[in-house]
Length: 356
Ligand code: ADP
Ligand code: MG
Image 1 (cartoon, helix red, strand yellow):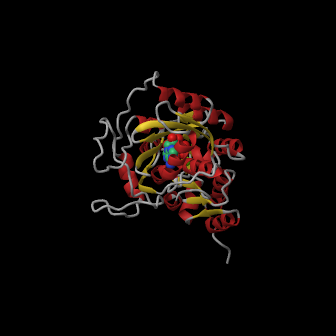
Image 2 (image 1 turned 60 degrees about the vertical axis):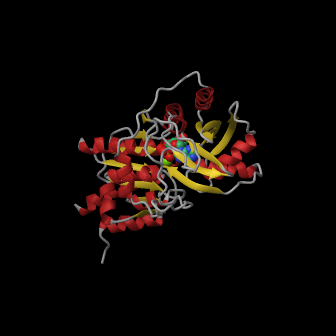
Image 3 (image 1 turned 120 degrees about the horizontal axis):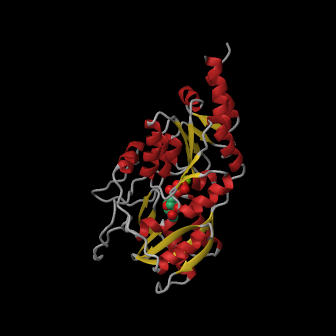
């Protein structure tokens, strides 16, 4: 017997290193009208590099000390930026203390207690606005007010967590993330341009890198400049997806505007939505879906999982993708090449024509 066209398309995908999870998913891929692409880990290589370390005046730390603290806090995280921080510390032969009370907030960063000090590493926007509180410790002074929602400590792939009586460890489900993601986020404070921290962040971002803030005991200690190279074939994949849908693809990223705009120029994307938290990605996708569009969302991180679930079809970049994202996606590009995404859409369209 001959294989039905959609199953035969799935088999072809499998031979080409793309895992499509069902015939329904294979079918949906061909029906998309718009493509939304994540930046870090999707359009850029999963491997990023620390390009510079700026220790802030008054932190009392050396570059190596700041990096060692940041790397120790990042070690349990799977985020591409976290792996870059750990790799930079290892290259310098730094010894990393164990981290306790690890917690991660998708789209924001991580925090942990390292050698008795509270270390937070992540988006300057989130950390400096107090959107990511440090872990509670006995005898700690009250956290600064104006903080946002609590840090999640139960994200599925961030495995090194500490259970407490009222927060038992359990794997997060996509529903959990969507529930968190759609709750209203904190209002953001205005940026103070005179602040030395903001100045260091602006300098890094102007250089086209991603600025990652390191706070030690709630005080800004360092700003890391992290660069992620573009994936091979990114511009070609963007152009092909635009041609297939008749609509230019859109960039959805948690990173800052300047880094996003620079990358957009390189890959040929002009519609750029930057500084998005996971819930903002969901709201953007939902807005299009509600307007009758069928969105293909491509992402890699835990922060993309809710948007992948909200979209008509979700595709995950596989090699470094987070476990939850791989589970949520309709298809996983195990081969880890962006060119596979337009191929998937084209293959689905051919199979649909044979079914009809
Ligand atoms: P993207 O949407 O481009 O994939 P993410 O949403 O994963 O980016 O991250 C958004 C921002 O959050 C990053 O640019 C970084 O500032 C911060 N961030 C998130 N997780 C981490 C982490 N583990 N370490 C450092 N920074 C992080
Ligand atoms: Mg990402």
